[in-house]
Image (cartoon, rainbow, N blue to C red):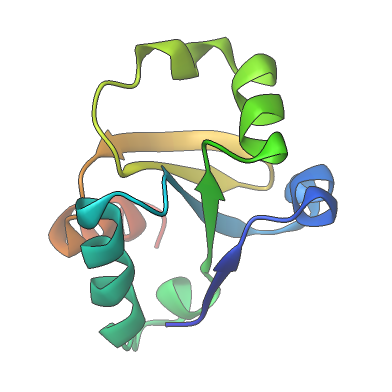
Length: 111
């Protein structure tokens, strides 16, 4: 599945995107790198899954700092990668770790 870094413009336009997985982490995080690889190899077949966009947010970046300031709940993140599934800009699910089964379970609720 295609993935890209979360950019300022994408973040500002988040409500215009139907379904987005924001993976919060750091480039130096081995678990984050592993989760990125799992997502990279995943080839979704259901239509609900194919409309999903995956973006990665580096907590150490200026945008990561802005994101944390604008989302106070991020102060409670104890484990990365941390995933937030957004539907039209609204967070609808969140979970720690890199589990494809957990992502698919969340997406199935949207089908």
